Image 1 (cartoon, rainbow, N blue to C red):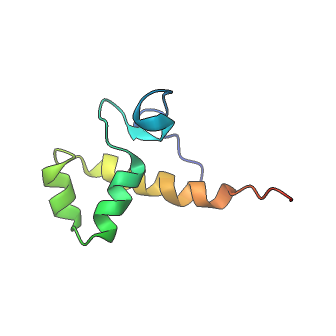
Image 2 (cartoon, rainbow, N blue to C red):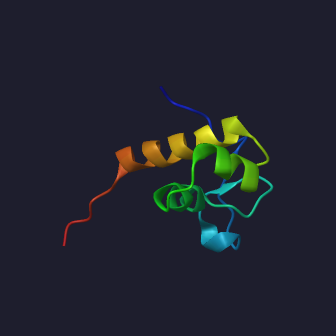
Length: 76
């Protein structure tokens, strides 16, 4: 199922190096993934960074998962 992330995830040149960010924040999707990888829990991330916005958290994860399905390989 295709999800429309535009209301939550934005990519803007000059903002965090053009990485996908959570709208109106300077938090990248990769920040969220790294917090999870470092051992932070879902509730900790929501409380510390996302003001308890569960939908935002879930869309960031879904964006990252969907992005992995569209890897482009370049021939040498």
